[in-house]
Length: 302
Length: 225
Image (cartoon, rainbow over all chains, first blue to last red; front, side, top):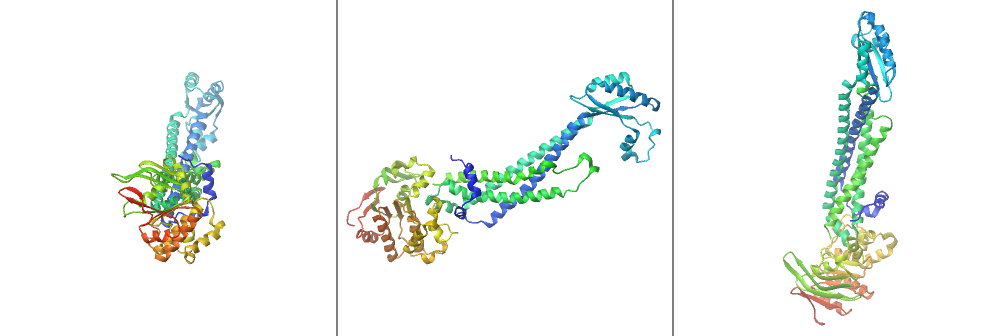
């Protein structure tokens, strides 16, 4: 079986005005192909945005938070400072700790402000002191550290974030997986749609194909005329759909800093290049699908 | 050019042609005649590779058709001009482009051979129909256009299946003169027809042999009909 190689691909873009004309124009189905390719590309842009955004979330939660832990000093007010000092000492001699720093009253106040409102009198409340621990290398050994802390600082509780982080990372990873599966399904749907359209065009043009064979056209010549038409159509539709999809992503309302890392669906940095691949991939899918359909149909003819 | 050796062809159950041995030598002129349904069209189709024999050997330009790939058949058809009984065109293209189609599909361009095309159009009397679409043509015009399309590549062999079926006597004489002219240039011609008048008229100008299909076999008809 003859393969459509790079030369065929080049011929698709270079084109042959005469060869193009041998396939009769088909207004309505042409528009349907354009529309379907556009709609699929639009959906693909969103599926990609979802995949990339949830990928970012999983990364943030998985790596950046994994590099930090919190030690809470729950002690009567008069012992709090002493225990904080003791805990910091323990932490400074713990393997895997890059730095440990007790939050100031002002910082703690800021953290609590969303819940208790401003103007909170911190001194009068038994608020535990928080120590922010930044890890390095392999990270710290939570079991060992807990043992040491319980021996030396009775009021210290280590929270390495893993308890609430793990399910979030799992959810974000699953969301990313679903996004990629959706993208693949959209690609498969494009292939199916183009195959159906090409198949219909080939069937409708049986007489054209018979005449071309009779006057000595090779299968490649006939197939190229169809492939070119459907590839360009799918490419054009997908380009339009991608542009609309990207505009829609740009216009997504920005949750800003208030939303924190929970929102931010959209593309960041070089990720903007990824949706630009959609029309190219749709074109490639259409090229392969039409080629396969044409070869299958032509093989059955004399 | 085209050689058949004990060729048989059967459709599903029954055998339509059997034990056909025939040789179309370069420059020969043959008529193929016989009752309707005897297998004239089938024999023609065997000769340009549209059908494969179910038994025996068929060689076109010295190569067994069974050994030909699809592209080989396409290339072979550029050397064989075929006029079908029911002529088919690309109905969305004007007549000139249909006639020039064999040039275009083989990568030669009609523009560079424009004078030939015009000459050919005038020969078949279709110059003023150049821009007409095939569905607008009469039966006779379609036959003439089909012949023009069949000969534009200057093929070595011309196979015509009832080429004068739909046209008047005068036009069929003109077509025939064109075929005789092509034969004098060394082309091999095979015409399937049941028009004995046509055969007689031709024999006055060219040495033509008449093959008759009867009882699934082919016979050389007498020198005089």
